[in-house]
Length: 509
Image (cartoon, one colour):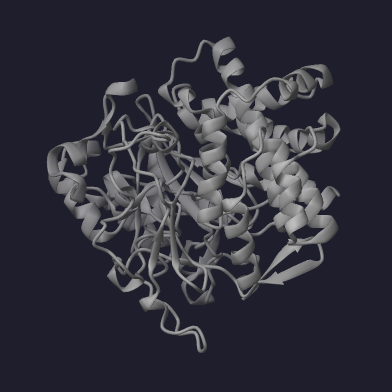
């Protein structure tokens, strides 16, 4: 069939995410195309029509199904609507055999994507059971011990900042049914799943669902500011929440030796817990090995080799050993400067002890070295801020965070201001040291970017976080999320695709 011909029985492609947002009293459904970065806004009646396109109905059948749901349409108008979606590359035929784009919440959805499908869980979809592959020569990965980030416990303030910043909050079928039973009045979803949820991707049927957002907040979040609370937790206890929310902000990664259990510094409560004993452990202390974990938790796996610098790779075991040495090194007075110096040393001499010595005794951060990183992040954030203004609520934390990051990076384009910031002591050195320690333990520096570029990326993020309090103060922002700017930067970058700025820098260089 010609790609220009409308499929006889169309459905929304799996690379398209449909997300329902309530902005005040107005309902909007936003389609996010992960391949092209295109964003399309629909009204509720148009969404009913599209959601009836499940690949089993022709246009007339879709119109009949939509009419039963209170969204009548004429066949010619429906044909024109679906032709427009098909021309935009958003539809496929049921028998097209489309392979969904891989979902990697830690990375960008695309070079101009309006959203990354990130959820509160730092791991991929928590709703898909996973079975670790047996790796000859390394033993059964299910027997690998759980190595938990030491000397840390979590004090959750319950205020729900993590329920207000992410693009998607996933529920599996059982979790969604339980939520609707506990809070049937929320969006009228008690008897009608589709009133409170949209599919994780594409249209129905779909195993995982995404709850609607009200002014950028999970629909089950109640209260304001420091009084905000998860109503599911309040009524049914922690087990009433979806698995991703229960495990957040804990991350799991198999490095071939153990399962590293760390924490994502994008949660404000994580950084507020630094140095405070007596909090909750990241996992139940009775859990000892991977076999003890809930099988739905996705444990990421380090690749056999990873890029250390552009064009240079190292085996996994060498990288793991290097990470352990760096974690044991004396933290520098300025963590951002240490990361920048370490990046230069890694590019020059690889994973040597001399490189770590450069980290411990870094050169001062040079404004010129940071400038391209800040400019690239500003370009991403400014573009996202313009897109968000077209459909997000003014109360939406994701919209505000993007605006603040755009404002901070714009201000730092002034060389004198950047130089003054770099000469000033870091406002929260304990937070910055923990940020690096947690990232090293969880191998969060090893990913799509070469290690040296990932180090520079993290240095730039810390500098932006240092500037953010000035921007929030100037804007008169009283949001509790402003109290931990590192977490705000981290959540906004991962949750909304801004972290793709680092790939922009890599391409430009």
